[in-house]
Every structure is written in C-alpha cells, then in structure tokens.
Amino acid sequence: MSREELTKIILPEDKIPKFWYNVQADMPNPPAPPLNPRTKQPATPEDLTPIFPMGLILQEVSQERYIEIPQEVRELYKLWRPSPLYRARRLEKALDTPCKIYYKYEGVSPVGSHKLNSALPQAFFNKAEGIKRLTTETGAGQWGTALSLACKLFALECTVYMVKVSYEQKPYRRIIMETYGAECIPSPSNRTATGRAFREKEPDTPGTLGMAISEAVEDAAGRDDTNYALGSVLNHVCLHQTIIGQEVKLQMEMVDDYPDMVIGCCGGGSNFSGIAFPFVPDKLKGQKIRLIAVEPSACPTLTQGVFEYDYGDAAGLTPMLKMYTLGHDFTPPGIHAGGLRYHGDSPLVSQLFHDGLIEARAVLQKGAFEAAVMFARTEGIVPAPESAHAIRVAIDEALLGKEEGVARTIVFNLSGHGQLDLAAYDNYLSGNVQDIEFSDEALQESLKTLP
Ligand SMILES: Cc1ncc(COP(=O)(O)O)c(C=O)c1O
Image (cartoon, rainbow, N blue to C red; front, side, top):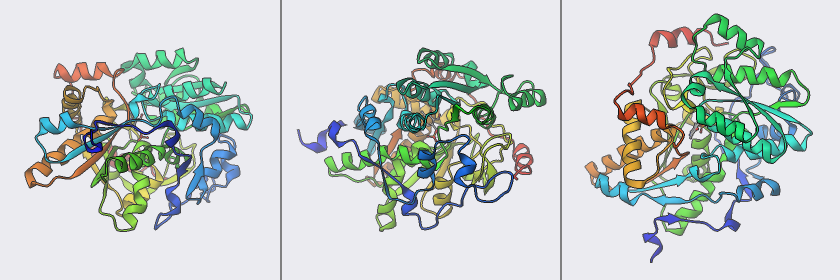
C-alpha cells in the first residue's frame, strides 16, 4: 500500500519530539507581560513563586525556540504518544468533497484528551521543587482528570475545583478523578473565602472557570506545600501542547502532504496552540497556510471580546494578562462544551490573532453537535463537545472546497473523545440542545469591570 493510501499515520515511539516549540522566539510582536494585580507593574518571577514552581516560571518567560522535554516526562508520554493522525476518508466520502481531511486524535491519551500533555510536565516540575500538593480548576473535567492522573504518577496530592454546572452534568469525570485519588469539589464552594463570596452574590450561579480558578489559587496561595496548576491560557501550557503540531508535521511528511489550513477549538487556547504554533514559522516564511481557532458563539472571546489587560480569574487574584476577553465578570451560558466557557484567551493566541497570523470563528452549539454526530457516524469516534467546534469548521471548509471545486488539505485537532459527555449527546439527539447566544447587555456590563 502506498503511503498516500494510509488511513492511520503512525509515528514510531522514538519519534516523540524531544523538545517543545516556543513560539515566543518567532513572534513578530512579543506578548505583553503579565502585570501584578496590586502594583499594575510587570509581574516578576517572585510574584509568581507563591503558586508556581520556578521551572515553569522560566518556561513562561523563555525566548528560547526549543525547550527540552525532561526524560521522565518523555517516558510517560510513551503511554500514548505519538498519537495517530487519521485521514478521514469516510467523512470525506459522506461530504462528497474533493478536499482531504486529516485529524490528529488526542483522545487516545489515558484520560481521553490533550490535557495530559501539559499535566505531566506541570506535575513533574512541581515535584522537582518539593511541592506536595496541587490545586486546579476544571470545566468539563478533562483537565482535572488529566492533572489527577499526573499527580498520582508523580506522587502528589490533588484538589480539583470543578465548575458546578459541569460537576452536575458530568458525574463520571468526578468519579475518574476520585479513582485516580484526587479530591473534586463543585465550584463555587464553601471551602474558600472567594467561593463563599460568589455564592452569596449569586446563590444559583452555574459557576465559571474564572470562579474555579479564584478558588484554586486562593487554596494554593494559603499553603506552603501547595501550588496551583492551570490547564490552559498560560505560555508554558501552550508550549507543552506543541508536541501535537510537531508530530503532525512529521506525519504529514510521511504522506507527502501539507495542510492548507489547521483548525482547533479554542477555550483558553492550549490545544489550538498545540497544533497550530509549530506551523507559525512556516507561515512567517511565506507558506500559504491558515490557522483557525474555533470558539462557541456563547463565549466568543476572540471574535467579540476586547484586547485588553484583564484578570485570569473572576475574583481578580491572578496576574493581569493582555488578552482578548469578555471581562472576568462574564458568566457564559452553561453550554455543553464546558471547556470552552472561559472569559479570556491565551496571551500568545491573542497576540497572534491581533497580528493577523491566526483567524477565529464562532460556531453555534447545534451546528457543532450536528458535525459531531456526522463525524461519529462516519469515522466512529464520538468527539468531545469542545472538539466538535473544530469539526464544524473542518466540515464547512470541506463543503466550501466542494462548492468552489478546490481540493484543499484540511487538518484539525480532535482534542478529546466524548464518551463521558453522553448526556450532552442525549440532549442533542432528543432535540433539547438550544443555540444560546449571550446577552450583549451582560457583555457590556462585564466589560465595565475590566481593571
Ligand atoms: C477536549 C477538550 N478540548 C478543548 C478544550 C479547550 O481548552 P483549550 O482551549 O485549552 O484547549 C478542553 C477544555 O477543557 C477540552 O476538554
């Protein structure tokens, strides 16, 4: 069989990249520095040490193009990496498109998503500096699940604040976290002062990632043996995810192909960064390639937000980040893609978007599920509702190619499987998923609270 006929494009284990790619080395305009929320001056490494280990702080500010992946992390990556790149032949056929569609499948990780790519190094660097316990937030539960496993593998304790609406929608993710030995608390909770304040202000709040971050940060800052880990947004998280795109480049070489466009769903921006950033140098050198971030219309950070400094959390405890934001007070509607309900976006993604190097699209919930179901019925994998947003745009582009009679090569990141998101599919299949737009009034109110 010729390489062009492959359905699964598989790299051998010894091709797992040995370095992460740091896009900061190549950006025409560097991202603006994070600011200390009290002094409003650029945050110093010392400002960050109460909650992050120095190993990760150095990665956050590094300008080195390549950063070595520690041997211990590479050994653990072997549990599922290199992940397969698939040619979606059956989807192409169903669409009757001349386009080629490839998807990188990150759902083969033990926890079912790309999140473990960063959870492992974050646990590793914390352990190396003597930390005993990590706290974090989680939306859909994918990040919390990944950090729970990473903590267990590096013998750390783990407490996860899970956004209340997802905690209720997705009980199985809590059970997996507990199976890995972590503690999982619905947020906002009574455990922290910020959690109690959110509950008092809005007793029926569905919770937000911003609130859960505030609780996890407060918890970590209050204990010397505890640090905080973030599942997206920050530079070091996007860095860790670049293992995805580096593998994709090798896999595309194996079939003598190159993408016209690379698509990823975008919550805080980490899986999109992971697949897209390794292509940025090619684009800067003049290669014609489009990098498309897809967000939900219910939380349209890049497409409708403002590019300003804002807090990363709802209570204003974190450093201020220059990013596209809907305002840290914004409560996105409780859509099923819980991992995409974040008010801000990665400063790296934001800067590149601002500079026109990446594009953004917002899609409605029903359209995302329609695409996900079509994908499941052709390729067999039930996608995470977050990943469904990328599939929607991949399908739309393949249909556009058909209309225009142009055979483009489309690559998207299937960031996770949705086997624990079946309540969402049940809702969709029984006609109970609504296209929720957010209220413009709420957005304007929230933008007034920008620092
Ligand atoms: C499967 C999956 N994809 C995507 C995301 C969005 O996060 P990010 O933008 O950091 O990749 C999440 C977040 O929870 C997720 O679980």
